[in-house]
Image (spheres, rainbow, N blue to C red):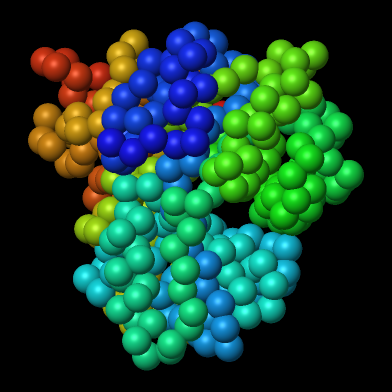
Length: 361
């Protein structure tokens, strides 16, 4: 089990620690619902230092990124970030990721913790053709997600950068909490605004302490991975390993918006053909219309009781007070307001297909 630079801090704060993607991570502190509400209404801090960071540089950096990712990275300017995915050769997804354009011919790719080695090997395989410079910085950097509507106000004292001026999916590299060359990125997986802060491991504890000192008048709290999951699910954001994986295509997963056929990329022809023909199944969002909590792996059944799909993510939504989830069903069952049923133990609980996000602030 790997530790982050902040593992001792979480243990001292009384966090419940669990193994996650090979790391010892805090799953909760006070409780999922309290932590969830803190982020929705105030400001909370996640340690997501387990995420991977790859630096790709040189004259061929963009060519390599264009080949291995589905979105059009040529549209990026310095200071902008882009959500994308790495398609595999069989119609599925190697991983989803965020691409940051740091400088001309310099890009930072942020990948999921569980896929660091897999992604590195995948990109390296294609780099044999391009010869871009690749560095795996995953073990050198810590990442704090400072999320919630009060994040800008709470953190402004720590930097001279005007945080309110950093638009969604834009970033600055500047001084933060007394440390130089910190990436301050207006990204996050909660849907409640805020920042992600990338700093060197040796600076992480000091930055953490200063973040909590700056935020104390705003009710800042540490937040675990369990609330991160309920927050992202209320927004309908895909989680790799649940809602997308090596067997799900970006077209099926509703990620056509990050799949740009204006360029050549891995498996582009097959994905374009799927988009034009129409996918046979789709990732849907659903809300239970009766009491019950849908969980990953539960069967989705039709009126006749036949299994038509599986829940990929599900929970009791703290904000909505009802069961919500995502899952793949045949395309003909994917229309909004369509009725489906979720098999919870011996009972088929009715649910309605809804439009994302579940939570509208």
